[in-house]
Length: 382
Image 1: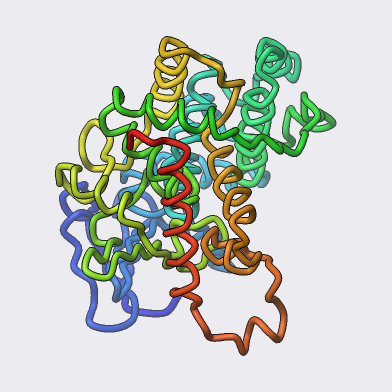
Image 2: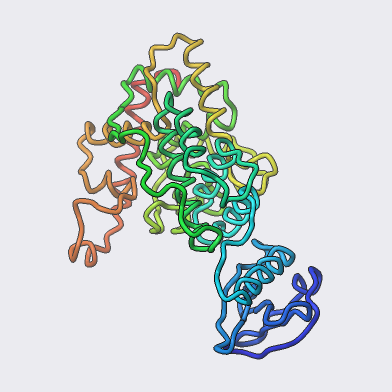
């Protein structure tokens, strides 16, 4: 292993207060377990490792603080016991313990919305109070079967738990996934739902009664961006002077930084929001992005129904499709629509895309202005 090595008795305080080296990496060994320690890099990243055997094989256990010292030490003990027996038996770990570890580690590799959605699906639907190795395929099927009235939710739950069990196999908690051979419960159908002008007007007007969530929905309507991107907006993404928003690559679906213009209506909405922490739409503790999608959307549907209804079942993502469809009706060129939506594939691709450095900002702003004019016609009272 590159870098210096130091021996010390590891405690939570010691690990928390380790200082990064000026260059390279430094390994700090735990006096309690041979070969176990934490490595800190020049950038401050702290990773637990176990080195074992004559060949000094290195096993990465996880990053601190996503995984605690006590959890990392317990994992190291399990691994050493398996290596001592000469075989890698699946360690004894409960479903709930494995889920917590899976979610904490995924915070470093997945987008916040993905982590949040996986947490919701796994904890809401799969309540297995037993070891992961003891969960039978039939138990998983029973959970999925109970979701037959909500096929989209069933598919999402199926995918989330299948990914989790595959992770368990990679971590050697299981020798094979109990979901081998299972198929997606519901046939996926490409959605084509576009809200009519009357439906869009009803939704937009109903947002008046929903406070911050109403503002969030209206920004989705006005900008055409994904709900997760609007829900995770931070104040420092916004250039108020130039009426621009820049989403970092870590937030966008295609991992590309995306800058788009704001119209006057969107700016007016943002100006009404109180600044409490980093996020425009913070969660309950103001330290994370908005989380209450299902409950808030259900409340919005109730308000729409109470005010006259007339809106067929719809999703927040349908607002993005409605936005794109209306821009096309306003004769906005397809490549401008795709730029606003930040689509990974578009009419300008390949070599042409590499050499095309024009940001089309003026054209995007003109399209947004036309959309706001059209909304004034659809929703006269706004």
